[in-house]
Length: 70
Image (cartoon, rainbow, N blue to C red; front, top):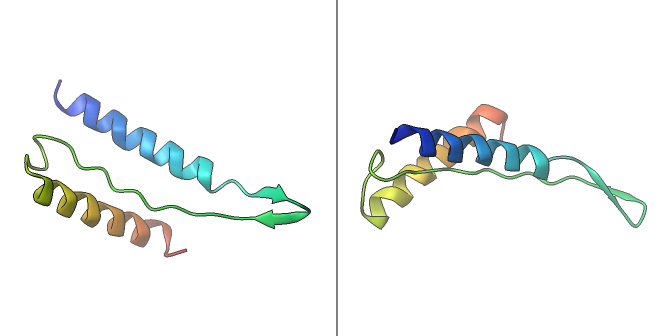
């Protein structure tokens, strides 16, 4: 059961990224945004802040490579 909340957090991060990337109109101009998110979970990825941030950062850069650096 420990992995389920982490998997859900990663799924939601993906949904958030997809939502952010939907182009929108602002004062007649099309605006496009992108986001790269990395999720790290306790205890799978560590317990201390430094280790968790390192894992989240690594996942964020892996996501950038996967979706192309935008």
